[in-house]
Length: 322
Image (cartoon, rainbow, N blue to C red):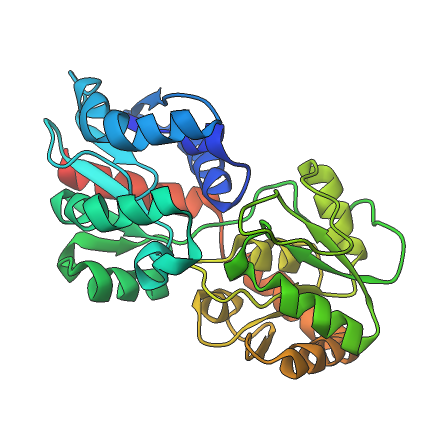
């Protein structure tokens, strides 16, 4: 079986989508009777992004599928129809749920093409039950075409290894409005703790104290291990990989009630109202007080998610379509 996999997110970002692609492709290599062809287009700039969305996905990608049995697009961008069965991975539908939280070009794509692409796909991988429900509600896709296959944790993140020094709490997020970092800053001040923030500079003019930018995974793992807790009260997520990464490193987690991160945490985190600064501050204090209870719960929860298990489910889906 020959399968073409779009790996363009690896060019665009190091955040959750890229982690998904890297982890899944790594687990798919050397699978018996599966021949992978990795496809990508363009560079990191805005011009490449526009061409990729406007030309590569709708037209150019399908032209690269001659002799291919299945095409797997690792985001919700893909061709509208094509020569071979197509799978799309949906990480979240924030662009439809809250279009005002995105730059103009992304809003335009979401309005003009996203639902059409989702409805044209032969199968959809949703990374959580939450994202499946969003896809059903916002895109009107038939439920039988959606398969929930969760993300996992890369091997760099584990409880054993170097620990960063200091007494601090950690936030891991791109600097953009929906990550709710302004409230995180206010909550950590109220709780009287130091905040360190790791993530790419995004958009929307978000600036936070304690920002260290993007760092290698080994350094991020050390920051997770040294942190008193991870604070991740995002306003909207389709999964929330940092929740699992922190748990795998033995770090308690404070995250949002009512989004996919509650599902991912599985009872092993402190849940808070992300709109309430006082609730976030109280959640931090609870996480610090309950570290001895939360750490083993988080470690056990993180072990349930592996890229090998995700790859098994993806190959099963491919075989059903080929």
